Length: 441
Ligand code: AMP
Image (tube, rainbow, N blue to C red; front, side):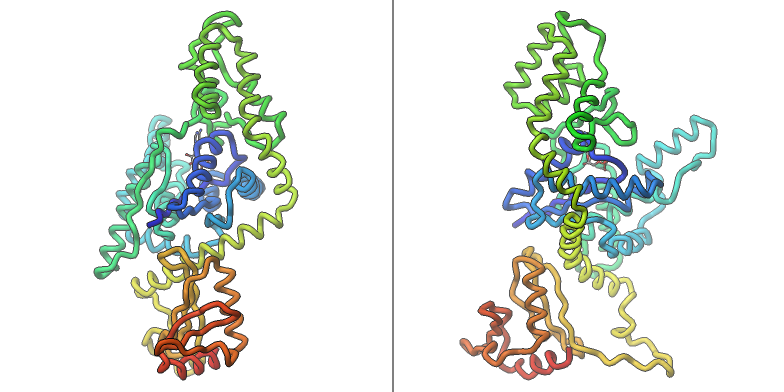
């Protein structure tokens, strides 16, 4: 069984070394494992909570997408998308908001930290607190539950939000599930091997503290200049340094092999000067980032290429989100008015119902579609396709008509074969329904 892993990066600034070592690099490594079904996204709705500069958000969306791709993410293997391209996410967020206790959100760390700061300053407890900040754990729950992720790799500060997502999922399942669970309860994944990088001033490297080492933006020159600004103590060359307590060494370790780290540590303890140590750190980082830099620059020069990849990713993601959302709407009582037995106004002429194809991603990770007759009955469920494009192509071919040689009798049932590819098997008795549905598309 594959494990679905989901992670996102907020698009509120330029990606930095901490994002790379703490999220992008380990996530790309995980995505290469055959038992992992990875969902990686640009959290651009989250960016609006922290950033009201439209240009910064727009630029950051592009930079973060280019960074993932330049660092080696394979968008064919991973579902790679932008949160705001999935309209089902804010819709789910609202449904989840309606089952989330306000008291639960009152306890969220980010909100409590703001309240504590305001209390210390002697201003109103909610001063400067937006509804976005207050309820962002619900949006995070929607991100995760939308795709029924099993594992969410996070830093320790996010454990509480994962617990909230589980609480919210359980409440929704209990209220509306009627014995079936809509949502998997996600588990937090804390990887002790993954470093949390300090920034230039020693606090956690973060866009919010403006203490970051940029990854690609500004070229190698900007990375070098930032490395040279890492705060150290005032010990001179020749004086032994406290390697373990230095931020420089923490960053070095995140890029070095264990024997390289041990050597660097020894050199510091034996008096290596900070200036030389910074040159060595920069060379080490460049060894890894240098080859990615060219790919990054090429991608940033072709935003339309990035857009194409993200649109294909959104299609893949929505192949899961759309059918789940249909089920959820039905569960909460928001069925499509055409399906509901609601009284219609005398003036309104009911639209003629048509047969249609409904595509979705199956539990096995493959892409399927079903043909639904005008009355709503399923005529057939397709075989599984490797990608949404192949499934979509097959739907297009069927919409153009059924070639006579497409139907082949085999062992008491009929196989529908298009261009040599098996689309589905169905009982012979279903043939009239198949022909009728195809003519009513
Ligand atoms: P954010 O930019 O806060 O949305 O973070 C995106 C991802 O980068 C998350 O998985 C964070 O845990 C990770 N991250 C952010 N800052 C650091 C850091 N200083 N060290 C390691 N990982 C980080």
